[in-house]
Length: 308
Length: 259
Image 1 (cartoon, rainbow over the protein chains, first blue to last red):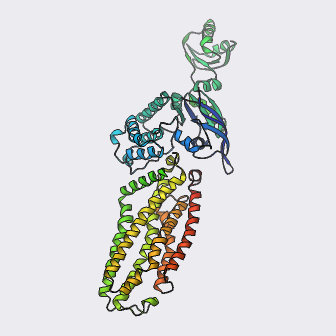
Image 2: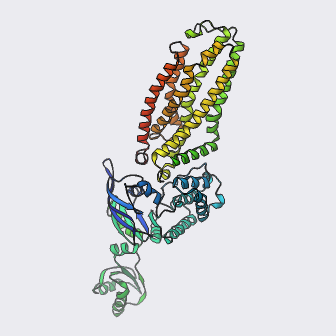
């Protein structure tokens, strides 16, 4: 699969302060990449560099086939960006806002109106197309800003907090829309603080705090940080069965809490029958067995917490 | 260049939707001009007992009848209005076009498009200059027509509609307007309220007022040579101001340094 974004040692300093340090990553085309990190971690600076809005101090990048700093105008034509603030002209209507940007993005005159209509329809704003944007709700403004980022059909789209401050229904619409973009083969670079959202949408995730702390798919990150695991609930106190579980060669760690045994082990799919057999042989009466599932929040907090 | 025109078109569209701004910039000057013509007309009719109270008058006013003197004083004072308009109008328009855009956070999405920063700056500058110059020249024409129609003598006409004044309107005012816009861009990097930018840019009025008082006191005679000389100085100042504005109006600077 081709790479939509490739960076090597991308660095940005502001005077003495290093905002982004040696960022090297590769994002495959047609995937959703989640860029997670605390406030002030350098995420917006990274997005601005990759969208050719500001220049890196060091390092290089190829975005949508364009080398950063070589033909930035062409690069900007190939990417779409949803900025942290929607930044819309309140006095102009939704249609006038989009027409303005369609022309700035070099759309052929014949396509301007059809593209504007297409995205206003897709984002369910067509009925309000001629109303001033100043009368729009936060959710409608956000949807309009997303439409603006897509008008010129970019192959790479940067979305900075697309569902921040949206009500659940509007957030769901935006998430579904992002899934639709991925299905169209576009690459999405998603900056978010909403970890369940990142878990739902992203094929890969980079956890970032001035530099890239870790990158992988959500399940890879869980496995790397926490290993695989199984939760066994027994009848009565589980503590007597801890030594039994620990004696098994494939078990890495065992914790207990009341009736629950939490067992870290390699390859639960093939080892769980052996674990259950051993516990039953020791007299355990098993209520049920389930997969240990760490949230992305656990992953994030462990990585970011360890670097603060 | 094409995108500068797209920006210009959008600015005009926004201006049309801002009634207060539209009134202040486009309708107030002709109204003031009409008032100036009316005052000029009245001075020629009702200045029979004009008493200047010992205020020194320009030497070229010597020997004028009271009616002529009344019209000459009123006409001279109002003629300076057309040197002030090109400072005020573009400053107001540019303040809303640039500081307003900064405040609404609309600059970043615009800068994310393939537009070049000089195209954006050119579009914004033209959007402030074109209405300002159009309205100034239209108002000045109205004033000239009024002066030529209602002057009580040819001497009065020649004292007000002078080659120096015409040159100042045609050469100096566009340069003053350009300096006004450049100053707003420079101020935009520091202020977040269009009105603050306008207040700072009002400093440009000072040299024009000095010219007015100098003329009325007879110290300065605005002849063609002086108008052209001022034009040369203004051109140099405008070049410097535009250079500074262009340095500040860069993607990188706007996104990382403008506060």
